[in-house]
Length: 498
Ligand SMILES: Cc1cc2nc3c(=O)[nH]c(=O)nc-3n(C[C@H](O)[C@H](O)[C@H](O)COP(=O)(O)OP(=O)(O)OC[C@H]3O[C@@H](n4cnc5c(N)ncnc54)[C@H](O)[C@@H]3O)c2cc1C
Image 1 (cartoon, protein in one colour):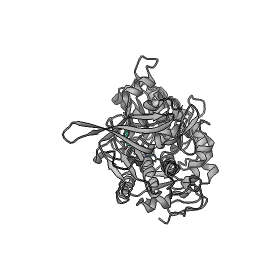
Image 2: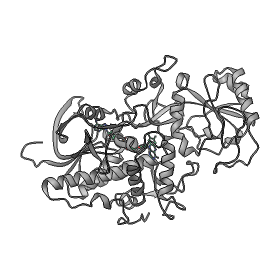
Image 3: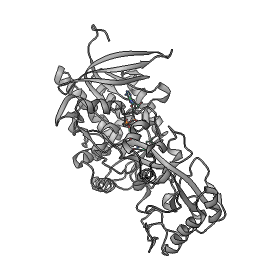
Image 4: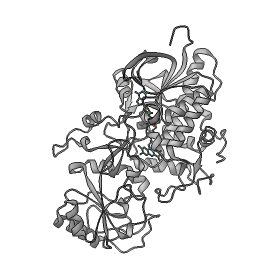
């Protein structure tokens, strides 16, 4: 930028859902906006490209959403999965926002469809994106381009200048087509940071998780379910600049995924969704957690962590013929055998221990009425760990096994913020530096997860961050034309027509 150009109003760092929501809101409020996306255009959109749905509160059926999912139920679900490690004000803000944000999404080209069959019992709670997260991201980028938002791909922000808690400039590195790099200092009146967590940074994960009781570096066996571009660089920069942080570095959305998945971008099809229909054993052939604790959408995101805590960070999801057709089939075939002994031998597990585990489990299953859509009465008695629901004996050949490893989706350690999304320095809110998405998800998610809430958080706080940034520009120039923050989660927004 040369000195003759007017100073940019809003700089947005990141190219995923939260960043795009922020950029579009700031642009609609009349600001000049520039997006810096670390990935090349082909890989733009971060983890958001892998998503399928958004968890939405609604008091009555709404286009693709059946029945009702009131605020209180959403809040109680969140309270339960986080074990209370959540900020109620922030959580309720995101929840309320989810009731009203979809017309705005629709306006920017996002289309919805009813829940897919086998998609974690989500017809009531989650609105699915037609074409998935990739279509959502493409729609937002198209809208951003039409509205005149400047977009730089292959552009990574590596440092920030912050003075007395106020954003001054970002240092960006452009990757040029010839393989060289160009450095740029970019000033702006305000800035939104929405560049993900540090889930793609295996070195940082290794440091956070350390060595376990068997001397293993736990994170060495992690697979990254999404983008390779979220390295947490600016989380570190801001921590070093004295910003207030929130969350635990080892807490994350972590799913048990097929151990054969690629290191990055395996996406949704590598998830193993039959855990609640069978048992899971570690490499010592022992069960280690209640596979039927709760509905799978409320539990799938803890299984990556549970597997991470096992020796070798590997486990095996075991089912029989009764489970076939009751879950989304994974992309890789399972190991299929006609006897449990053969299955154990094929997996390289100790057959004696495996048979002991399976026999004990089978004998402990109480006769009940199996219903995978309810917290049914099929449970075990007399074994530890218990299986609370959907406990049917594994006795109908053929038998199936899927090897699972920890698949990290996104980390929760990030920046402490408030309902304006301002970054805080020693408890004081910055006037022009805001944060959205994974970078601040720890304000709502201290631990645990419930399906679709990542996009609820990104959409709510992305839009709020864009509005806050525009308000900040207004306070510097007196030219803001957009909505006030408090109106974003109110009934003033119409309901989705799609
Ligand atoms: C396989 C998978 C499936 C998922 N499914 C769902 C789902 O169905 N529903 C749901 O709610 N959530 C889902 N999630 C979680 C969801 O993806 C995230 O919660 C959400 O997308 C986070 O949005 P974000 O904008 O904060 O981050 P991202 O979408 O990851 O965007 C971060 C962006 O920042 C860029 N970036 C990183 N560092 C820099 C830097 N230094 N400079 C410039 N740019 C940078 C990245 O390239 C990326 O574009 C899923 C995640 C995965 C991986």
